[in-house]
Image (cartoon, rainbow, N blue to C red; front, side, top):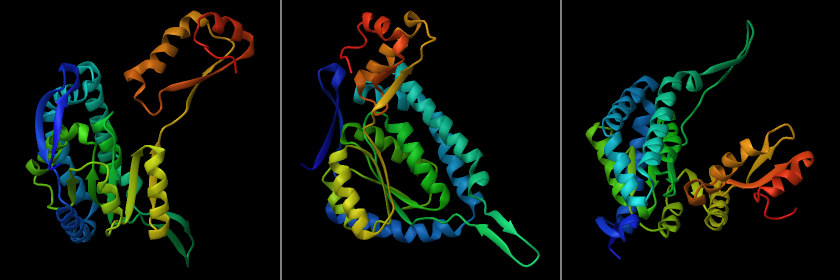
Length: 290
């Protein structure tokens, strides 16, 4: 396989386009260049990094409808939901820019006439970030923008199901004249993980399955590098005894079946107060008696 094929699942898997797969030699080169670029990126001031990222944010704002439509086509997300997905990511992007100094400026924790203790926030160098297909923009923003702000360079591996969307993300950074090699993308299937973690990666941020998590966690431990994981959750819904059952049924069903359950924090179990358990059971929400 030399190309990733993008299709529209809601239209009989109509082919939308294709993207060239990144070769192993290209991956090695990308990581090496990212390592070099990060040293320069970390040396500039936070205000300079903010200036660069403000340009990226502005470009995303101008393209938000275009991006919403592409997400909807490429992954069968309803257009109303894809607009919310893009807007959510943009809101978090803006918040990160507005609050960067608050969280990244050095902080004094202890001070006397002869002694001062300060916390300085330092970059972790090259961050490899791998994200799933279900919320491609908002997850990307939460993981990548924070890393870039602190002075990391980012090598992004995204889902092959949304490869055209990621080409547009790459284009946004290019059109913003973002510093070369500070933000890079890799187009390949999941096997790329084995290649990437064997190279000079300094941090892993992974969102997806426990199967891949086990192998990555072991590699991160052997390399002695930090790793951040967001895996499948088991989100509970808590129903208190003072609720009106009829009023919460719709909310419970909506949270349970939202996005066809393709959500890591989607409602998967209920914790119900014993005083209303029987009444909840009659609604057929509680399918099993735990």
